Image 1 (cartoon, each protein chain N blue to C red):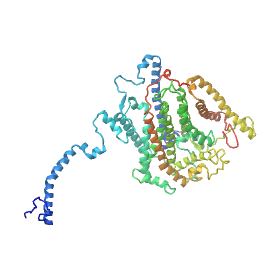
Image 2: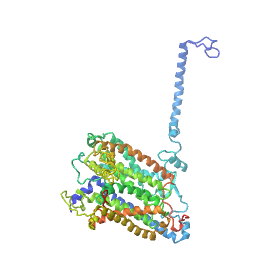
Image 3: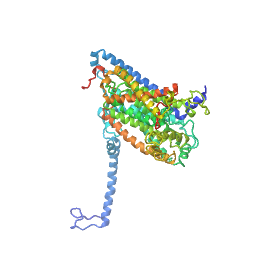
Image 4: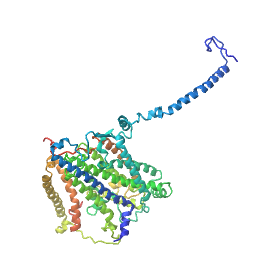
Length: 311
Length: 309
């Protein structure tokens, strides 16, 4: 059927308006012809852009710079990455030598990440209650796929972390890296050392076996003897301390190592101390940069070059 | 020689970290010593040759003119970090596959483990329980260790040796720290782990753990040796002895420090100097008390109705 159109080709008031069916029919026809011509063209265009994936909007929204090997891109690779931006773009050429840093600070942090990862997985299988805890560990060892590996890895990584922290402290001392202007960061490090030991210690009780129970009993019995705050400590009795209100009671949530102690060490181990340690770690890493980056290997100074402060 | 007993102790899963710590510590101390030696040689060379000191790049490692002083973190540092992470992961994997984490019987308050040992990193403190009352070994000592570590940067006034390994420029600081860390901390852990058996008694490596062994300790208190009986005089006597220790060894340490560390002595303020002396003398009090116990069987030096030292 021939189409009747108004002079200007539109369905104006002046012309005879088209019927609804006519308009629909012509519209669909147009759509089909456009599909036939536009789609292949667009598909071709799409394929062309796919040949250069680094030009796509998705890619450029994620990666802000090019990756060809130029000094600028090497710097940007570090600076524009949230996980790497704690590093400077460039460092002392000798600072990458393993024998200077021993890599112990980084290894400690890596072990913390490993422990967080395995720890979260372990939490899926563990109830911090006297009835369940030990059975959960047995279940983990014998029925959970890779459960034994998971628990082993968590335990050995924890031991390794204590070793790595101690060696890190030794290295920092031997290189004199705690000296001006890094005094404060050494202090943050000492606190992190203590937190590492506490993290490991609170985890010791969690399997609820004889080993953990007696280790924690021995450990917390010392708290009884705290001067002033323990009921067996010097001046504790004079200070009104009994087994039911002293510092040990506060640690264990009771006068013996029992269900409350299990829950308390679970919460300290999984939530409390990791959060505190993370905060101190943030400060520690931040201060490494703010105090002038890694301490060395620095040029040696001679005794004769030391300028004595005027008194 | 009971090899089985020895193997049982060494191969106990939780003791493996200490077995690992010993060679690791030896290796890293060797690494540090080698670099310290090279740097000390360089310092001696530069001190004897002022012209060279002006032009030298001042590191024991080679440096050619034209080499860049700095390198890009990407890739030169990141590849090291990546490698370290991979190696640690492999070590952990192999360790976790070959060795199971210990799991004893369910906790039973009615069945005491003998020996009941703290985790290995606290065994140094547990070993101290032999020589000191719990309030010193378990509370005061850890606190003093933490505070002592924290004051180090504020009492070490030596400006030399910041950012490189050295021995000759920091003999006192390094000697003291290694004494505290290796002798007092690590070797006490080793004793606590490998030597102490049932009843926390001393069993040489290879000696069978005898659960029925009894040792009749004939420990005496120092005031008793001097025939002091009244509580008041015991207290006064102990205070005099402990005070006398701090005074006498303090004087000795002062005489030595003033002579052999003259520059640092001059740099230190009264507060810095007295803090250093307090921590130094307290630290040396530890092995002295241990020696007193092993040679003269002295239990307490200072006895009061409230606390004993």
